[in-house]
Structures are given as structure tokens and as C-alpha cells.
Image (cartoon, rainbow over all chains, first blue to last red; front, side):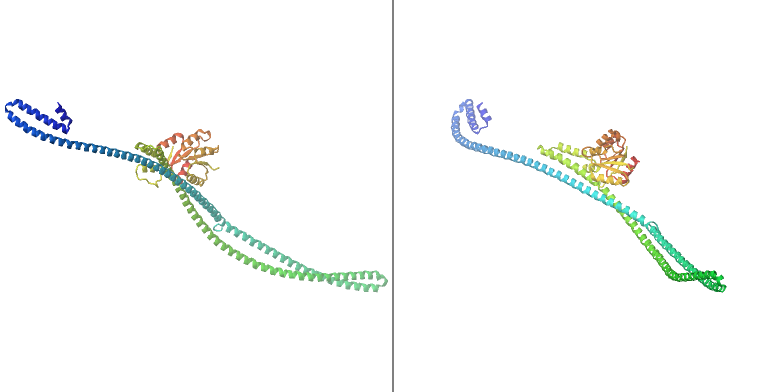
Length: 408
Length: 121
């Protein structure tokens, strides 16, 4: 049983002992079975003893060697254990470093996402302000053009075309001026006629005054004859002589008055004649002036019509150009609607980044479920078809105009 | 007397563009930045049409629509949604709340005018 135990133990020394014992046990069995052959047995024992001694020495050597080997093995084992401990320690340090690095990486990523969100908000704000300003400026340009077109319309209506508007008014006004000048000329002509009439009347008066002068002379002669006849009659004719003297005196007075009238009439006729001459000359001059004015006014009106037509054409061209520019500005204004779409897209992206940042800030490692949830939430927040298409990887058309109208 | 239209949108450019299109056709236009602002600006005024965005801060378009329909003075005022949202679910909600039309942005001026002239004859 011991041999069995020794074998089971697997030790090298125990194996040597087991071999010796087995040999002795076998020898005893052979001696008992084969006693007659004792000499052989003794020889065998001797040989066996020598062999055993040799075996013992050999076994001791082996045992020594095994002992040394065992010692080395223990030392090696201890060293290996030390190496293992060092290795495990290094692994632990490595894992700790990795964890720290991961934490630092998450913190850095969260900060980066925060920065990206801020940049997106800044870009949204800038774009919003810029487009709002541009829209206001374009609105101002549109209104200014509208005002210009309105002014051009008014100017066009005021200047008119084909004798309408301002030109027509000017022509009428100038015609009225000519008419007034003609009326003044006619009035002057009447004045000349009146002066001529005065002159003729004065001539008639002079003739009549000359007749009075002649009558006065005859009365004077008659009164002289009457005085002579009265003197002949003597005392009876004295009263008649006084009457005749008185008649002569009256005749002289009449003659003096007639002379005075004739003198005054000469002066008057001279003045009237001079006035008449001057008036006639003035009338002729006025007529010349009037004719000249009519010609000049016609020329000016014609020139004005020509300029007016040119102006009208220019105004129309300006009006058309302003209208075209206004339409273009209106179209450009419509294009500013892109800002609303861009702002919304940036807003959705910023919201998703914000959610990722919150998860990173919680210091819990991100997992696939959380990422999927954020992605689904982002998809649900989309309002535009192109966003959904882009999210699903389909080619998106950024200039796509949906422009749908649904009446309920 | 010109018809008055209330435009509600958080985007200043959309407000300005809509105003430009409508004032060009002789409409009086009042603008508001969100649902709350719109309710404040109603203030008993005679409004012939309300055009509103859907997604806005403070109060969204659907909430505004529901609030407006609760006000006796504006119960029958036509309400148009002008939004980038084209989802059928939202359109169904708008219809149920009493919207008269749903327009998807960006819009063409003629289309906006057609909608307005149809609802404000």
C-alpha cells in the first residue's frame, strides 16, 4: 500500500525506494519458491547487494539532483509569482489610466459639443440678423422704387404726350397771352381811332369857329353901317347908335373869342396829331412785336413738345426699368425665406448636440440605446422633407420648393 | 376700408416678405413674433385673416389657433397655417382645430395671394 501511495505521490525519491522494496520482495518470493538454488541465490544476493549499493549511491545522486531541481523550481515559481503580481499591477494601472483617459476624453468631447452648439447658435443669430437687415434694406429699395415709379407716373401725366398735360396747358396759357396782347393791340387801335376822331372833330370846330369869325366880321361891318345910319338920323337915331355900338362891341368880343378858340384848337390839333402819329407808330410796333411773339411762342411750344416727348419717353423707360428692378427685388426678397429653413435645420442639429452633451456631462458611458434615442428624437423634430431624406441617407435637394397648399 | 391680416411668425424675414406681398395688394398687415404676441395684438381689432407659423417659441401655431377659436370675436376669422411642416399628422391637427388652409414654406407670392383672396374675398 505504501508503494501505491508513493507512486500516487509522484515523488522521485519515493520511486527509488519503491524499486528497492519491490526488488527485495521479488527476491524473497523467488527464494521461497526456489530454495534449492540457494548458492545461486547467494550469488545473486551478492550481486544484488553490489547492485543495490550502486543503486543506492545512484539514487542518492538522483535525489540530490531532484532536490536541487525542486529548490530551483520553487525559486522560479516565486519569481514567476512576483512577475505575475507586477504584471497584474501594471494591468491595473493601465486600466486606471485608460479610465481616466476615457473620462478626460468624454469631458473634452462634451466641451467640444458645447462649443459646437454655441457656434451653431452664433451662426443662426448672425444669419438671422444679416437676413433681417438685408430684407429690411431690400424692402426699403422696393419702397423707394415704388415711390420713383409713382413719381414717374405723375411726371409722365404732368408732361403729357401728344399735346396733353403740361404741354397742352402751356400752349393754352401762351395762346391766352397772345390773345391778351391782341386785345391790348385792338384797344390801342380804338384809342388811335378815338384820337383821330378828336382830331376830325377839332377840325370841324375850327371850321365852325372860322364861320363864327366871319359872321362876327359881318356883324361888325353891319354895326358900323348902323352907326352911320344912326348918325344920319340925328337925334332920332341916337338910341339906335348906342345899340349899333353895343353890337359892334359884341362882335369884337365874339371875334376875339373865335380867334382864341382857333389858337387853342391849333395847339390841340397839333398835340392830337403828334399823339396820333405816335400811337400809329406804336400800334405798328406792337403788331410787329405780336407777330414776332407768336412766332417765338410757336417755336418754343414746338421745342417744348419735342423735349416733352423725349422726356416722356425717358420717363417711360425709367418707369419700365424701375418696374423690372422692383420685380427682381421682390423675387430676391422671396429668396430670403431660406433663412427660416436654415435656422430651423441648425436649431434641430443644435438640439441633438445639446442632448449628447447632457449625456456626456452625466459621466455615464454612452450606449447604443441612448444614441439611437437621440437620433430618433432628432428625426421626430424635423419639419422638412429634405431633412428627413437627408437623415435617412437619401440625396436631399436643398433648393427643393414644396409650395404645397391644402384647403380644409 | 382695407382688409386687415395678422401675420404670426418668429422669423423676421418671413414676416417682412409676407407683409411686402400683402401690402402690395392693398391689405393692412399686423405682425406678431409668436402666439402670445399675436393674442396681445388682436386686442379687439377687426381682423379678416390670420396667417401663422407652426413652430414658434412661447406659443406655437396650433395652440394659437385653438386659443383664437375660443374667442367669440375671432371664432369665425379664417386661419391659415404657413409652415415648413408638411406632416399629415400636423395637418390633421390643424384641420381639427379649425384651420382653413395649410401652406408649406417657402411660398410663392402668387400662391399666398391666391389663398388670401380666396379666404378674404
